[in-house]
Length: 238
Length: 279
Image (cartoon, rainbow over the protein chains, first blue to last red):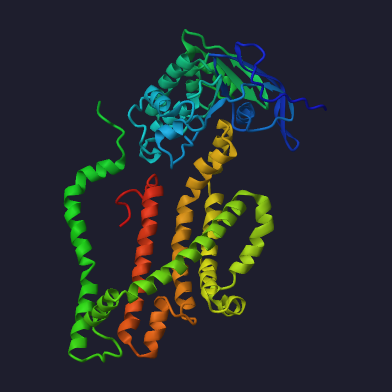
């Protein structure tokens, strides 16, 4: 088999697309984790990726982030997508503004970082240390850092899984606001069906390395999709 | 808006500070009582002639000797020479240790090439090297500085290397996502991340440096605190011997305070080193 992999293209084919994946394949030894997968995400579109553990959804996200090299297929993605991980991954030895501006100190600087912190509800905390933050606050700083350079593609790897239920609901509201403001294409990997229904314009269910089903909740009563989604995930609802 | 997310620290201190401060002060004073009593008993015993002055002179008489030697400048000449030796050896050994530690911690190739050899040399207790060092360099200044450098090198090397190894690989992954260049990775992630470990190395290195200095200065010298002690031994001048021991102790305490200053400066982000967390 020929492996043709186009990596990191700053000029995504269509200006409206944040990412475009064709025929993506990834194997670990003989096990195929991602199998001939196609995916397009438009700018400003919020896509959720659901699936059981080990179905390949995190591998897909890591491939889009440039952290994992596929064996075959092509990925057209912006040069610098942003990632928010399950852990906040803030540098404990840097103040909040330095964390937010990491890599962009000269272009965005303290003023830009302060504005980004204000956007996530942490105005005036520029000089504070990460150790003084709660889990939700730390994840908000991680969001501010991810959006500091207005990325065309935002990748969220179960970013709210470690938060308590109430904080998670607040974070959903914040993420919706921020995405409406910055309009990146978003891919969120999650285990939480309700999270996907609340946030996403399109929900993909991944199974055995392929996209097995696609749902578009739309404006009205996204909860109506819940039973069908759960059925796709192998959960029988009552 | 009420701050519902204030940290536990502020909550605790806001709640109980009034009662704690006076207790803190009390305990700090209390910690000095036993040393004070010991010195007092020692002074009384010496004055009453219970202890022969050749064995252990009275604290007041050691103090008088110190004042006398400070006034004629003798003390500072010897102290200065000793400190110069220590500083010279520390800078040389520390620089080499840091450079090797960064190289080996960072690059698997450097580790493959260097680590085994360094560990083999490290297995030798540095004091056992003394006879060989004398054969190589004689008993002059170079031998003394070499001994200090040797004592300092390994603790700095080991702790720098371990500090770099222990850096969270998830942070390195983040650096990749953000697209930091190599310089920025070293400056923003590797060095600050390894700093707690490096400063632990500095602490050990200082302790080893004094040990090396004490031993090296017993070699034929005409200057230095060690010379003072050797010279005083010849004349059974217990006052001066005791004084040199006390000076070594004071230098150790000052060096430790210096490291704490560095910790306060570079590790203020760390909960364990934040203001007031260590006393």
